[in-house]
Image 1 (tube, helix red, strand yellow):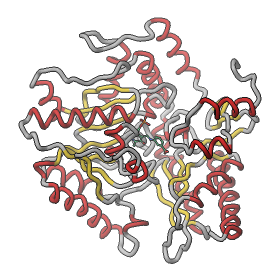
Image 2 (spheres, protein in one colour; image 1 turned 90 degrees about the vertical axis):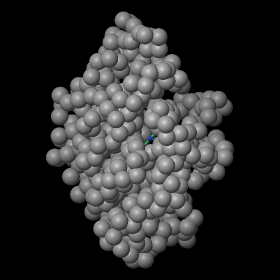
Image 3 (tube, rainbow, N blue to C red; image 1 turned 90 degrees about the horizontal axis):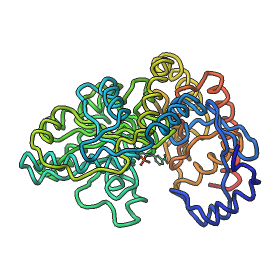
Image 4 (tube, rainbow, N blue to C red; image 1 turned 60 degrees about the horizontal axis):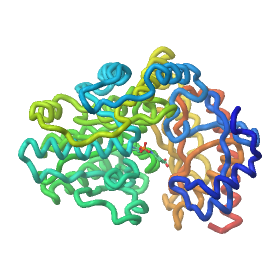
Length: 459
Ligand code: PXG
């Protein structure tokens, strides 16, 4: 393979001299060096030392059909030869973006029928903010500007999408959130609802949102935005009724419901979209990641009649768009990716076979002395590591134990993601029962090693 003729050490040296990594402590990384990933096949990636690593994170929650599917490379190759790029700004369009829009109208939640493309979830969430504000503006409700989101939400890294997100550490850098973005409590029962049952917690969590609406005044609130299951925030699974009640709240106060499907979309919950898993009908959705299984960057916003009736009928230009909106190669890859998901019945298989097996096997860890809770739906799992199981006491300072465990997993050729002191899985939809068994075995070893470290280091 071209370019792979350097040693690991050489790669690391060049990397630390010239490459700044996202969400990384630059100084620390220069000291520790990176692991160089060379290739991928199925549910595994291989590094420059020839370790074959089980990728239980599907890259970054995105490689839904697994690595190494030649069909995607082939359609990209064909489309690049036919037409590598053309824009859709000035009364032109390319065929893959048209075809993809039709396909998406069929599989997205009921009522969603028109799509505006970008190249990342962050960009598309910026589109959501601009589109939703324009909607209220056209309707003459010029004060309806504020977005309500939740703590630990992740909606991206641009100024607006990081403002939508509820990550304190991100807000601390760069004077965020921008005005017009507020956050309420997420449905994270292990942390915020320790001594109440699920129904009581559900009412409490929804009430916190309603209080926020009332505090700001519904005349000033444009939309509520949320991930069906919060991913990067730690696989926060809401109580079963939560989303129905939030949908009711949005109707009651005339607020748009925006659902960020960037992680939950394209099969992760065992339905095409998380909104279908929770049986809600959002006004706006955002998607990215799984639409191309990460093979090429592509994202989008989907809207239904309620919004398009206003923004289309009104006329006048929407002054917003990206060079790569509707990129023909990315759209061609998305079409092929969706075809494969359908043809190989990956979503049905996730729902009926693989997700129940993953959930069952991972819940075995509830008996481990380090584990406070195992939660998840579909192919999303979060394992909360805690200082004291009985008292539901979390580690302080937060994050050290999670990172120790993540490193043990990696040394055991298992990729899981640490969020604070929780360990997350979000594997490809192609994950097999055999691979899940391997994951459980390697994760057990890693957890035991973490427990030993905690004792030694007196954390
Ligand atoms: N919304 C959600 C729900 C996401 O998970 C984005 C928007 C932004 O997408 P882009 O394509 O701009 O990255 C995401 C992205 C992590 C991690 O550490 C998760 C994401 C991105 C980076 C890191 O778990 N999710």
